[in-house]
Length: 253
Ligand code: BV8
Ligand code: ZN
Image 1 (tube, protein in one colour):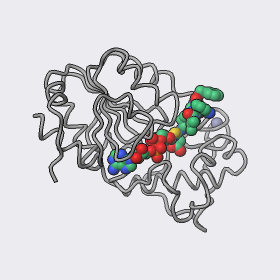
Image 2 (cartoon, rainbow, N blue to C red):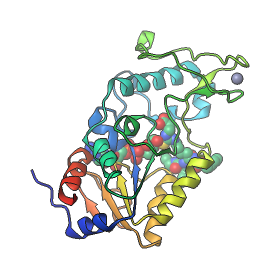
Image 3 (tube, rainbow, N blue to C red):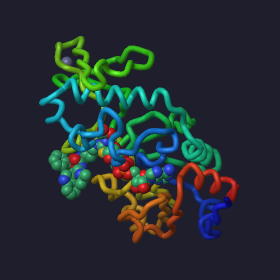
Image 4 (spheres, rainbow, N blue to C red):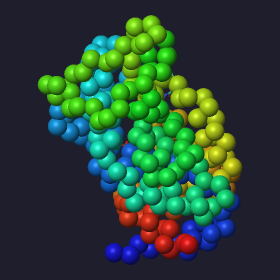
């Protein structure tokens, strides 16, 4: 099935000096990673992501939250980057400057070859001590499915004995300043901004395309479903990122 890529997008990309990709869970969907708001599957079906992705949940039941994140980290380690990740990495060799700004906590962009990736919401593979912030080095290899399917005791900090927490930004927590500031600079400077696979619900990340639109950049959305960005995006490519992104590369270069 050939995807029709609008000619004005092809022209804009061929002449672009700086492109930003703002990605969300949808770009990892075709790697088999459940998106953030899809019904939680299997063992986690009676929880919502928002219920577990916050510091109070960890304070209340650290073993349940640590078990959930280790389950997710196991999923990511068993997954492969998909054609969307690879197409985004390939565009970096066609355009003078490309920034990948992701809300995802997986490392699939990096494993597909993208080097400068800004992680607004942290990374599954960078846990740290909840008490003193000391980084924790995870043992190599794929974590086992938590015994009994859900709970798993988090490791303890080698420096202070506190409990290690997932290296992600939870709801109600500030985004890492360096990553956020770099993302704002990139979105305000770029010629074209792609929003790929995000429901555009979570703030402040969801506000980034508006910064680009205000500076007259072309804003392009890639998503099979409607989102709140539909009215802002100049071009809406409706479909799966793993199909649209490679078609975009083939049509442009
Ligand atoms: C903060 C890490 C300052 C954890 C995540 C009321 C109004 C406005 C804002 C707020 C509010 N109340 C609270 C807030 C602030 C809150 C917020 O925005 N809440 C929302 C829910 C309303 N934000 C925060 O708390 C942020 N911090 O504001 O700090 C502050 C400080 C103190 C006190 C107050 C404020 C921190 C937000 C970061 C939270 N952490 N992740 C973890 O991963 O466990 S967010 C989480 O959602 C993930 O990172 C995820 O990436 C992100 C966004 O979700 P999406 O990526 O969009 O995923 P989703 O499932 O929603 O959508 C997938 C999309 O893909 C869909 O559109 C689907 O159609 C599409 N898709 C599916 N398949 C494909 C596809 N697309 C393409 N191809 C496909 N094949
Ligand atoms: Zn510590």
